[in-house]
Length: 511
Image 1 (cartoon, one colour):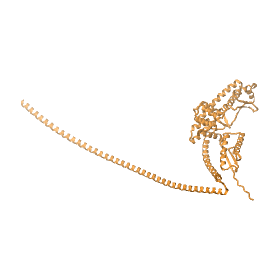
Image 2 (tube, one colour; image 1 turned 90 degrees about the vertical axis):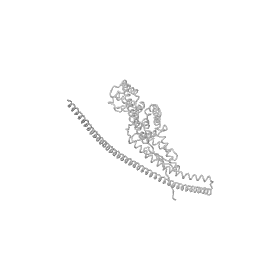
Image 3 (cartoon, helix red, strand yellow; image 1 turned 180 degrees about the vertical axis):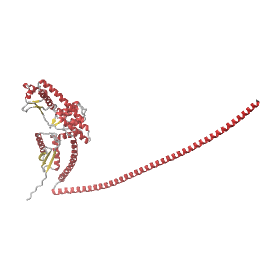
């Protein structure tokens, strides 16, 4: 039993020793593998570090190369810019040198001309002195008498030269101004057109039968008196078949009477109460039409914010005519024309258009207020808050006051264009003949005028002067004075050309 225990103990010791040895061996093997693994990891890390270092080195080289290229490009650009600046500076220097040479050349020429002028002046003084001495010696004149004779001869010579120069300058200015004016007027007229309404102070009402005249007159004339009292017009019942005439200088009243009478004739019931009712309805209809016409005119010209009373007066112009031209459409046309002219000449377009629209405002109340329609219209416009610039445009478009701005002149021109274009207005034969006679009378009222002829329908007046009384310089002044007197004395559409003719004749007889 003890042997077995001993044997077991020995066996246990042997097993323990073997286990310890085996453990030590396994530990040694594990440590060796750890070292190998660590070494491999270290080599891998080292290799990776070397690769990254190589990559960083390559990137650094690339960046350095890029920076170097960029620096070289910037240096080249600046070098080119410096070269360009140097070339430009050289050109400027060459130009300055050339200018300096030109200035020196011009200065030398001026010096030469001054010397020539001084020499010529000295020669003229010498010749003048010799001429004075000759006059005193030959004619027995004193020095003052000789000076007067010399001044008279010089004045006559210089007046002829001045007349020639003035004619040349006026011809050049007239050619340029006429060409530009034609362009502006043509441009404006091409873009504006309006209808023409014949001037009339009467209106005709058609009747279904002649017996309707008796019903309009009524018993003892009570119906016709009621119509005339309610409308303020005159009814003319004559032998005109199936028609009755309404006569009135107030176009609004005439229109009210026309509408009311047309409805009475159509309805057939004509008596004072019915007449009063229809006249009231017609008045309301005309007032509404006037208001709508004023608003339409403001819309077409771009002035929707005008005072309602101004719009009403503009609308009343629809029933007002002048020389056969409807003043409502004339106001709209003048507004557009003035705006176009102001645009071409870089003026105040809005002021010009407003002045053109309101320039004949006074004609809407011309039968109610005394005075020129331009001044009346200006007072009305000022009363309703129109700018003072536009008020001056209205007041000055016929010359009652002086224009204070470019737009006032443009509105006057636009007004003349609208009235002077072909077909815009018509004149009676009597007025036409009066204007021709007035033109000839104005021309013959000046001294030295032999004959005067109004031609081209009064668009031109030709004057023949006495050559022994007027010289070339005087006829220029005469033409200007006649034109001014025509402007101040006559009213006419468009313009009138004044032509003065001086004929020089040389007559000699062979004996």
